Length: 342
Image 1 (cartoon, rainbow, N blue to C red):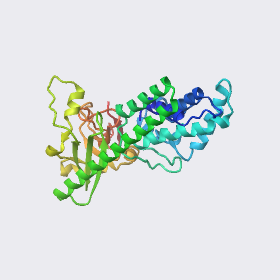
Image 2 (tube, helix red, strand yellow):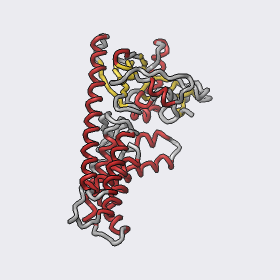
Image 3 (cartoon, rainbow, N blue to C red):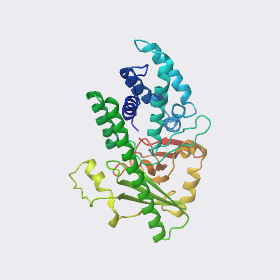
Image 4 (tube, one colour):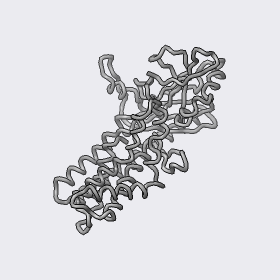
């Protein structure tokens, strides 16, 4: 989830849980909820301090997103706010709202498909429910409307609470859509006799009814871009990015499955490409990628084997500099170099 949505959700939660008998004022509680819910994304500083983007990919949503370290972060933030806010509140009156702000940030990340290391630093396992796209205007819009109503009208807690109820219902809709997409993938596997498969569904932009269904089958995938409701949409050549993106998702009646081979279509080259993928230099990218696939990178002239992650391949934007890496020979034939797409 984007940092602004996190912060707004923290402010809304602070108002929904406020009571007039609380020692902390509603204004201070809202401010603390907003800032605390944004805090875990402070690990973005990794992106600014290293040229190796894989370091950021592998450690983002790590220790600052850990439920095990949440009490410690909440204590540190409560102590800081107790010195910054005027008049100075007691840190104990801040601690619970700091815990709530951190918790809602972690929850907001877990529902996406990026993965959150909730047990860091003791485990690098990433939790991901795969129900919500990382930028969801409906999700954010519900929070903004509820927050505006809570700020503008007298029933502050009531509007904030209502906003969370609506948000919960929306998340329930997404959960249902996710399971529906999984069912479609399982039906396709049975009809096409794809045995020993694992079915995954990734949320997609623009609509809670847009899904990328990924059926893992041996060393390849069967991928479909599904629209659970609505008719087919045709984009013209003159249309921009978003109309073409909308048109990429197909109604269930005409759903097309595309085969993506993890190590490419050429079976004679697959063995060499597989060796490249398992080379030690690719360790960090292997740790991050859930659905690695050999891809074509038209942005570079280097003779590399390029790999992407199907989670982050958006129609019309297949070759991105963020999540496409190639293992490339150097001037020394015995040496290899990990090269990010540019």
